[in-house]
Image (cartoon, rainbow, N blue to C red; front, side):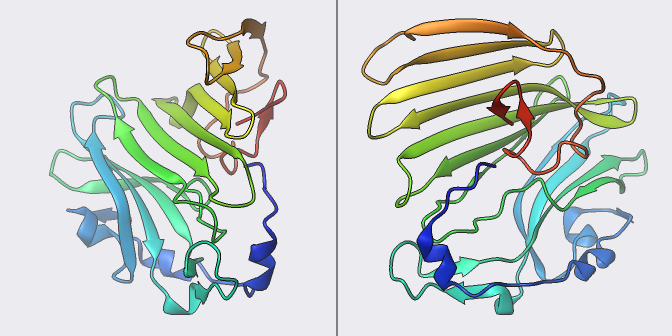
Length: 235
């Protein structure tokens, strides 16, 4: 993610935390409540068939609730407190016996609300009828930046990996009204770039670019969202 420097964040004490609680995230369980640790809260969960075996699978985003990682914002601008507890994305495949088996755990992919002026960046999860996993984010600062943006990642389970097949984003500058939209199809390896202004119904320019990847981008190797660059675009 493009880091926007907000001076207020410097006032908040730095926090270090351990992810050892995730060791109690079970390898297998009959329900989400049965799988996650007691001191973690559910941000969102979805069920759907991700691996095309006819059995519903489970995807969830969770966050620790350690009160020592909740910091007071003494600056008075933005949220009163900042919850710096770690977040985790989990994917469990369903089994015929009704249980779920651990398939993937990512400690990076669910963006943390790490600034008092940043609205909640995690927008949600979806599993569509074709088994595509969608993960959405919205970046909006109520102070410190005029830019706001929406981002959607689409992953498909292929060869035992969740491969990034599509990325969509749009960004608006609230001061100038300028807009940018990016549509990246990783199957056709083409990028559509649209530029315009919120005052106009149609984009002022639309350009297409081709790109080539040496290997697939996956949910595990892409790193943190909005921090990977492809053809000058932050993914």
